[in-house]
Image 1 (tube, rainbow, N blue to C red):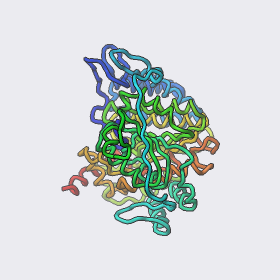
Image 2: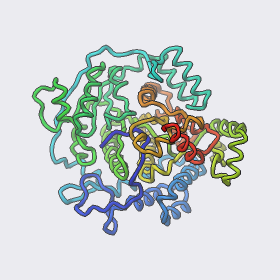
Image 3: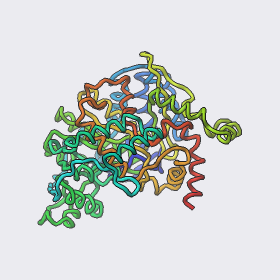
Image 4: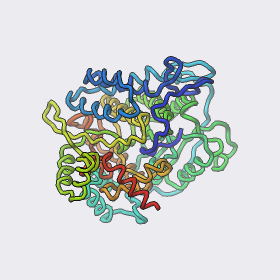
Amino acid sequence: MGADTTQAADARAGASTPAPDGPIGVAFPEVDGTRSTSRTGREVLAAAARTVDERLAQALDGEREWRKRYPEHIRALVAAELRAGDVGEAVPRAGLDALHERFVFARDGAEQPLRESLATPAGELGTARVEGRQAPERSLSIPYRGRRLEGDALHRQLDAWVDAGTVEPSFAAAVRRVMANPDWLDLSDRTIVVLGAGAEMGPVASLSAWGASLALVDLPRPGLWEHVLATVRDGAGSATVPLRHEVADTGDLDALAGAAGADLLTQTPELAAWLRGVEGPATVGNYVYADGADNVRVSMAADALTLELCERDAETSLAMLVTPTDVYAAPEEAVLDAQRRFADTGRLPRLTRAVSGARLYAPNYAETVTTPEGRRYGIADCLVAQQGPNYALAKRLHQWRARLAREQGHAVSVNVAPATSTRSVTKNRVLAAAYAGAPRFGVEVFEPATSNSLMAALLVHDLRNPEAAGQPGAPLSHPLALFADQAGHGGMWRNPFAPRSVLTLAALLGLVRRG
């Protein structure tokens, strides 16, 4: 399916999805004649919660207002994990097992478990290779507000982002390590599989400029592939792409774009067979996205392919971006910073908070959670209700896979990406308005070119630095601390105000600003 930008509206979240003519491809399980996304979401979260908090699991099982109350349950699950301490693989394994036990692959009126379907492709995809024509870039350069930042200018901007609370200090430190080790940019010793090659937040442009070897997957849309293939040709690396039919001249990019691509949802077994031909070691990058319930479906397809590659080769590594609009365990340093900023707020926010009964301008961290080891965390609850429970479930799946893969010995690059003005955001009126008004509340919204360049640099860091948090041997204070390291949350974690308590105000200001 389409490319994941890590932030988008889930217009059909929570709805049951009846399929009178039968489903095609990756599908939710059928229960009592319908394929209820709400029931599946509740059951999966309950299975994960049961490993750390039976009472929470029971509450999830009995929830009847899932569309309205899912944010508080996800928040409660994060808090329960922190209180339980390091329980290793328990939570992510239970959640992922629950998902794979339920999801099926449907074809020609028959269904089978999704994982089993990968062994029975109905046909074979061809392969074409595209080579870049440029010399590889060997210095880090980031586009930002009409300029290219490198060297001292990039160092100064990193300092500014840290001082403003836009990114965590470890984010800046990781980018600086890449700047100091330009040879790291050469990733030609491995194949980077990019699921969602056309993603606005994806790394194809940067990796191609640096000379990487890529295997690209996205929908069969000629316009999308024209852009992707031109990006590879204008870079220094190479890319293999799946073909639905033969092309007489693979040097003809227009003809190649017309034949390239495959649908993760309906051609999952065929893509699994195609990926078995990828030369290792491989890094599997998941950048896919779709609207509504399809977001969970395409995430499950990508996860099934990722799991197969990991099981085939122990050296397989994972790469993904996680959305800033989710729930995380924020480090104590970020909590204290947000509390200091809250104490310094002026009279107007205080008055508005009092008049609204604390619904507006509420403090970002009303409570903290202490682990059995004595470490204190805040719950960074940045969920946006408009994105819906399907979006939240898909993003929880990504977190679980990254954690479990790391526990099982695979290196992972998983980083919180900043709020970014991607097409999937700007097409939603409410979110577009909120993003337009966000700077008034200390949240920086990045342009896609800036975000994807920075996140590609973090990918390089995570694969090359043996001390990176995503390396299996690196110490973590808690499994959830994996997501706090190098977080580029855009300022949400260190903001004085809880994000949802100022979302409406940001949207109103954004509507005025947008005219």
